[in-house]
Length: 509
Image 1: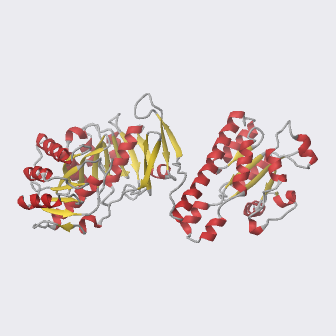
Image 2: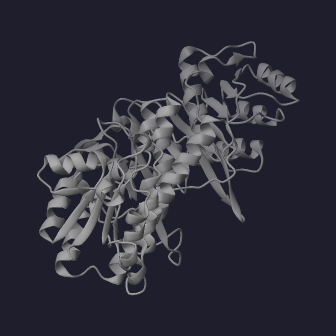
Image 3: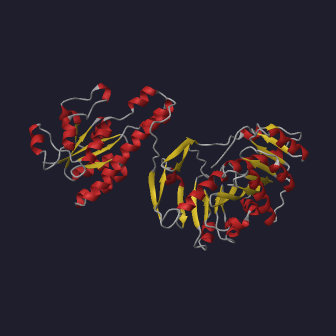
């Protein structure tokens, strides 16, 4: 008896070629709906599922494969259930190739709930789970990427137990991801707090190790973000590199202009917004050249030979940019420990905004909507002091505000001429953050006079304003909202500092 394969796919990439390969390997093809039409139009002899079940498609296609002739043929245990199968005229199905209705794609294309509901697959997941359950006897294929591998394994007789296990696990991952997508969409649509939340990602690669050498590490992606936007040109990005790259890219691309951000251990230690990237690099180093040593650098623009030559003067661990000239890559090749990552397109880093973020806590995780800084927050901020900032200073305030919002609280940033001069972050006291930045600037020989200062949350006391005045700050942006706002404003007026209140806090813990 010829082996039988059931093919029913929404994503029809490669399905005709796969069917031809299966026929050449002695398989009889069973199919449904659009897949059947595609196969027949390409010359593949295929049997309609209805010929096995005795029914055509019912209820507008809602019921096609939900029948014992199909699920019995997939699920019956070979070597154990043959007598029952024979008595019910159920013949084996040896391979199931199914991928599911495009539910997510439908939600992105339309808000029509009726159409969205019709793209919730029922028979597909049932067949996938049935075949995966009986994986020892039935090959389950859910991805077009696996067609060639599966055909080769059948032809070579290498469809071993371990090979079948790998397909089985992938099948259950496929249906788990699908069901999670449906549940998440429905909770969003009906504005419900999810009774069950899942964090689902696709494995991109196993990393050499995690945060420390004794920990395993893995990179997962939402959608195809890293597969589409991330290309390692030199070296191998580590677990810690990837977290620093994320921090650096978020800041460097926040202004949709040529910019450079330097990050060390998750915190920015240099930033400059400038169309001339060579100048931006030199300005970014002013903040903390000591910490920049061994840092991760995100560049929102093309890296050319001149910039590469200048950057090669110090040790950098990772450079991430949307484009590198061939001359720059040749120069960087001289630095054997340097890792180069290409990320983005059209000379711009990817400005991705995930809808939600989460943190692992003991025994669980906390989930929230992702924080974003609106471009209008500083532009529309209230001037609460006698003095108002000039437009030039307001631009520096906007940069300081954006960097502060993307830096660990408590955080204070100092910016002048579109470049970060000093930063204090991750402190338990806001005045300590202000003083830490001021003291670091002094030790680096950086003059803060004329700088704009931002705090991502309100100042509870005037002491931070007094410290800012001692450093030469001319303008401050903060959310406001302290019970001592009046005292803080009075301090700013005493020191002739302009102050803006945004009314919006940006904690990052």
